[in-house]
Length: 263
Image (cartoon, rainbow, N blue to C red):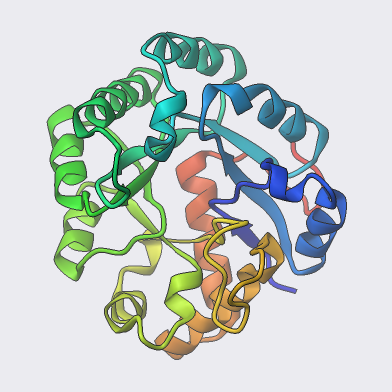
């Protein structure tokens, strides 16, 4: 069985409340024993923290997601600092910029985004980044702050933008979208990119894979993402699994793992 890490899953959200236990069991049966679970708003931090304490192999990240801008308040940035200092998560996020969704004030997004970059720098934590139609500005902000690491999840940019991120030491996360044949540019990047900078993700419950359109996504399907990328690179799935798991362990500084419990 493959040993896989889902580097981006929202297993804490309400869509999983009715059957979270079976979803986690299916994931483990599929080799996805570990998951990075990024927050989206301060109101969900308590639930996320409790879930990650209760379930082996779930690791929290805390951040303020740009799509939930209406829920954020400036004082939440101070609260975020407090949470990070107290809880010591594996990353800051999900945070970033979204210039795709209408009605999200760009300047407010920039305020929260830059502040979270500074928090990540101050606590020496990697970032879990969201960037839609905003990659150039995200890259410029990363350069401006400096001394940052992390992953741009669900990467959807150009090869040149990917190269700029790699030069900054950032990984890119690939999930459901890469399984669609029409995603030629993304599949080209997946086929040729440096393997040491690739992470696998599902973004559950969102971004269903090809063949699962209209269905709730879940971490057990990460093995299909792995198989797709392995086919694009013409290598065994085990090679992709081993490399991406090692990448996630390194980036998020995950504790030692014996297959069933954290150290």
